[in-house]
Length: 334
Image (cartoon, rainbow, N blue to C red; front, side, top):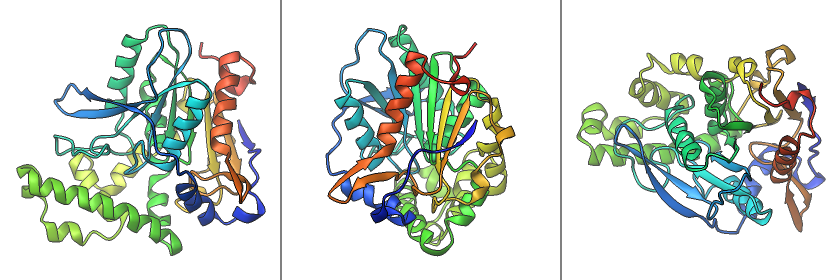
């Protein structure tokens, strides 16, 4: 189902860049979490961040996937954790490889379609907490990865999902973020990506044999990074091949579980190419489109008391799905 969102941007935050940037500065509360290192089968690791001790009852466990170069300290992740903690809900965030503050061991890292690590973590959670339903939430790149996971190999333990501001058409998003003011976001991300790769070059022989520091420092766009680093490192022929193989838009019709997709038409990371047609959606997918909201923004309320609509909408979705108070677009999996 493709439907209009109930979100309406307030008069003081109608600009997409304000919606995108302000939450980073308005969420001042530090993240409270318990860290765990999870060893992967290939000898690498990912770090988990837990909202606290997890009970053995049948309350759901929310599994969160962050965006490109994000972490538990990203404003949307720490804000959601704090919100869920206040509501008495349990959550765990999986850091993608190399995103928790310590470089991962292997040369390979993560990308928009890399679902293997998430599969391993969810399998472990299912084993540890066999009576708990799992609900996955993916932001931005983590949302596109989650769409790939749901469509290609949906774990049995997952009962529902939320996808927020996901770059479901990767090629168009790489083009959009290289235009106008959006280059500010691109440059911000590239600084971190180049720094992390340069760190690997200085510490890993495989990396130093593949790239030269000067070559890395000259990477000027996300598409260039994907062409020179992401694609060859993860078995793709080119950035175009990577984008075509991993874009989530064509996979929305294959999602088998209740999934809420939240997107703003003015997202400065994306063009309208990421917005699906109704016939591209699975009957279990509810796609809520707002005209404003920016990228993982959705601020409302007043300037002196801002509110974070995303947290509120996610909570309502969790309640609807868990209590069975939803329409056919959120029907239980057969």
